[in-house]
Image 1 (spheres, rainbow, N blue to C red):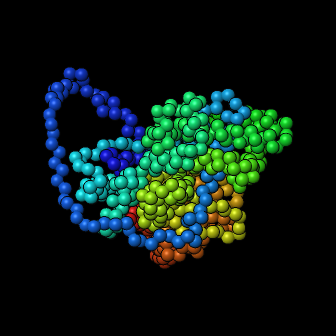
Image 2 (cartoon, rainbow, N blue to C red):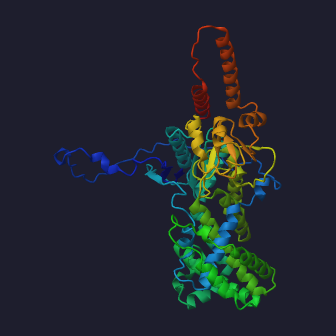
Image 3 (cartoon, one colour):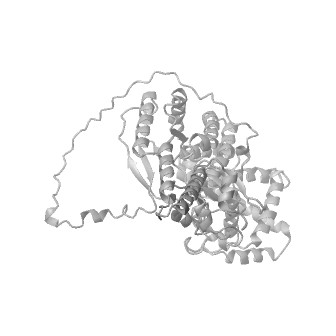
Length: 546
């Protein structure tokens, strides 16, 4: 993934030598180390010879996805979990539960430390020219393509702010298909700043800024920068504090409306059951009592009444502000956790605000960027920069049925214990033993075929329900029962799969060999072809795809 000025690369989990740089000097004596000479200051001229770019560019005229497309209506399941966590955090502050952290600290309790890979950060050579010049942007795009080739990556993600990204997208539309390997993203930081500016316009004349300055939360000299979104840290801190303070008042109004004197004691008792320990010891999500679901649903109904004006115009106005800041926090959570589905789902909600408050550049290009994100499954299926794959199978509900269900995907992927989805390599899974290792969390041995039989049939376990995926054709089969034969079901759903055809060829060869041995008095061992043939077609397909 390339951001303007530097490049990031994920560190594999099994790379144990990345943090042992001190081992490089082991075995050397102190006398053998040559001390470098003192470096004198010199002016080094960087040769930035770039070809001029004279083409007239404009936004791509490629048609967008239709309004009836299912990808526009997809609501990620993790979004409801995030909102429930936010509700419990707000309730903890309302009930003054000790040791309740801020929003960032609270959400870190529910995010495992190893949910996202660590990254290398490498700085790129600087270009001594304006970053918005077309020839400079074209040069950076060509460098990105060279980095992609050096890293043997099929696609590469490039992140820029809007002033650069809109020119890069226009150049990419004019130069297709030469630089289609690049996936150009809008920088989330500048999207958030523009969002803060829109929220500042919303509350500028409401009396809210007066409350902040009179209470000492915001200095009068910093008011203009706060309302225009110039200072990210100040906007992030004060908007979060102000919004949760208003939501606490709204929640207290909800408790008062309940007319139940024991409701607060009940909520306090439930909050004490939540384990706010280290996220590797007791996950916060697993310790939430199920009784919170009923309270959460009743509070959502009360919020809906407020949003419809049932509790007055003032309450309705400030609830809109609370929901805007909640939208920002959900967007930030998607960025921090690498949740592609929430990120894509919230982009149009943020873009609507840009349209309302006349941020026309972010409104126009935000729509195009969101359309590119939804099409990434087909245009850049293995693009780097996100920890999640794009196939909706990882989030679908599976119901029991007497026949296997099949869904076609475009890549191998596996869902980890934390819910994060990572891509898998065909070459690594070429052997049956490697495929069998993916069935560590397989818990359906009594109601489905054995893990050994599924792995021999070319399947891996995806980590979701009983979904298994072929390493060759990428088809996903689920709804298994013990009577199912994995080889037969694989052939039935995907008869043209290379793995299936290879197994059939091997079976025919074995039958022919056995018949020859029965007719020939000399016994000759025929070596099995399974592992060698599996490696051959997996390796060939991987080389073709790259």
